[in-house]
Image 1 (cartoon, one colour):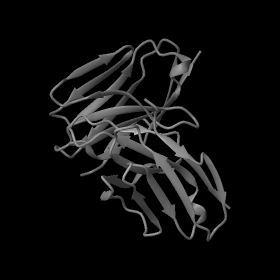
Image 2 (cartoon, rainbow over the protein chains, first blue to last red):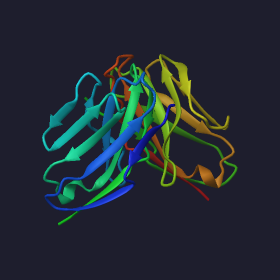
Image 3 (cartoon, one colour):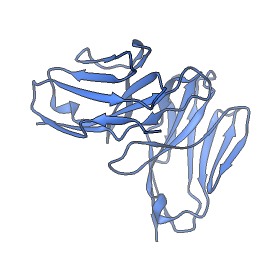
Image 4 (tube, chains in turn green, orange):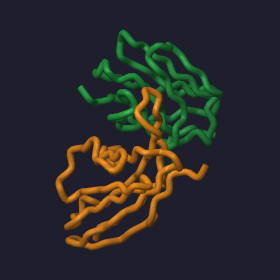
Length: 111
Length: 114
């Protein structure tokens, strides 16, 4: 109930491609869904976040799509660049508490 | 505003020893959470402190403990270290209870247990 599932575990795309990372949850009390980006040796950094009353949110080249009925959300990276190579975590929280993280997706963008 | 800071950044200990890690949250943030990150297990929630009280606790043995001070700074202690405790320990702070609260992470403390 508290888990957030994330797929794929790893992803390789060519520069300019559009990697898509998917997450799913069970707990309908979750009301905030952030995505984090982590580079080796660094802590995760907030990338973009969405609330369940919105179906899509864009910030620069990053887009979150949210499907409340399916309890799924995904991250799309437009025009991906080698500098986007990192590990991406989706997360969910309930009223600002009980953050639960997905297992992470290691993205490699080839030049 | 300065970000979340963690000290030390790297630590090497031997089995059986104990260790204390420190976290200073972003100014004004009252919630501090601790996570253990390992390659095989991802981000595992340890505990969360809010206004000096432990509010939530993950599924870790009692060897892992923490506390929060009146200035919101937090410490995490691991006693009787085991090889499996080698990990990156991350601290994250957030403002208060709200549905759009975001956690901001520090750079982590890399603990190696030999």
